[in-house]
Length: 268
Image 1 (cartoon, rainbow, N blue to C red):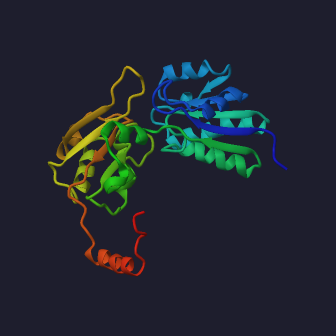
Image 2 (cartoon, rainbow, N blue to C red):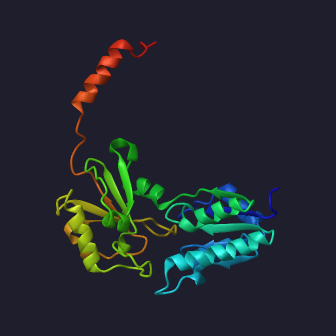
Image 3 (cartoon, one colour):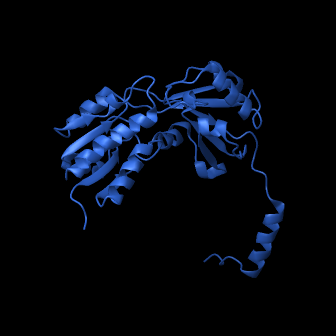
């Protein structure tokens, strides 16, 4: 038998008042209690216009405090209300499931305990990146990695595709207590990238706009200059392809033989 209570984790999108979907808004307005983990106090005020009981999760953060502990505390607050039989809505900026582990944990735990739980997607920084930088990820391909994971593990890189590194200001941080790693950590990231990209390769530091009066950040610099660049938590590093796609002559020949056996329909 399903337990009483219901959880919805929804995304507000990136732009204040501009990206909220009707489904996400309906979840906020129909909830008994709303928990908010958003990017700006103005966003919290906007959410409060939609619901009388909005509880900020920002107080769970503290300098020097492990982010894992922070997320555990957020999860406990949400689950306590859910277990009390209430309709709970967790509100997150961007997409609630992109670089946001806690909403995934909350939905999974709620379902495991017999509660109804859903995640409503939102417009993420990735979506804004494609629009603002004019990138079609299907044109030559696009690989995405979290910057510290990219640095700490050996990943296969294809320099004929776009490479996007998220949370680059935290590159190399293993403590989960910092809100920025140091210049030396970023220099190590440049060393790793220089295995596949020249040091003068033009890269872009990107940040999506969150207010209508803002413009997105799209600062172009040489890869070698990354350690001294101004980085914020929301900064994303975009590396364009360093060379063109390389045809696979052998595979093309095999496909050509298949086409001879099973040709495409003639034009009507």
